[in-house]
Image 1: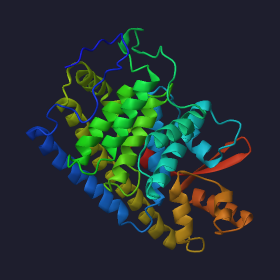
Image 2: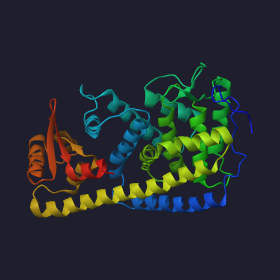
Image 3: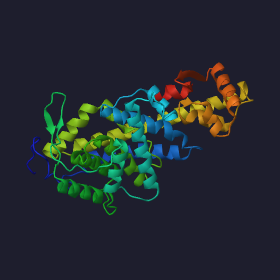
Image 4: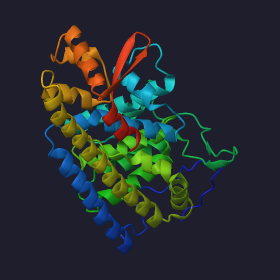
Length: 363
């Protein structure tokens, strides 16, 4: 094993694949259950009549949680206001950063769907969108990661040539389809390697977590980028960093891989439960409205209300459901019937789908 010193740039970090045994019996057993949970999520979301309904809400919650890991904290109120009215003057800088994450995730997803594999160029594009800057891979030395006590815990590679060499190796590993290692095991290795290369001046964690879900889409293990991994990392943050450290210092891969497999399994199950709850709430509203307000009921109206918790009059107008005055009456009636709450922010009125809001904020 190569010498490692947390105070020195890790320019000689091992390339992939790892030399250690990454397919131990316990890892393979865990991979089976993680794959099963992921397959159930993929199948259930794919077979829904309008799977795109899920993407706004679930990807935004992932964006919020992923940003929170890096101390970019925003409220759900701020977030959905930013989604509904992105140019409003009252949108906080943190909410804007979360929206940048969502934008980057969608950019990467569209590239994968257009048959562009994950490459260094994709990594750089994701970074540029997340951070809204035009540079790329770090060129200057001096980057180190510190804990809350200002102690150095890790010093990533700081030589641009070494960073590019390691990224090229990572790109080859990601796209090596001859390698028959289980993709979920590979995901754990890819995530570790990207985090430790730490190629960008900022936003590495967020870019790395976007790469995670895009890799699953690239490997056709997910149809849509709806795995909500960041919440698990927040809830098991100490273990996350402990396992990362063990790989770096001792090349002990097993606990790290098991951690990621557990995260995938738990997250797939949780995301599936969220999806089922959303569709159940949507179905219940459909049935109730047909009885309570048949004059305003339409499939299109229900879908607009479930795209995200915050709705505006203009959403109904843009989707040809009703003209502004009629749309206002529809939404007021839905408030009177108890389906929506209304709040005012600046000049905007937001109509909040109470059932969808409760599902997402309690997930």
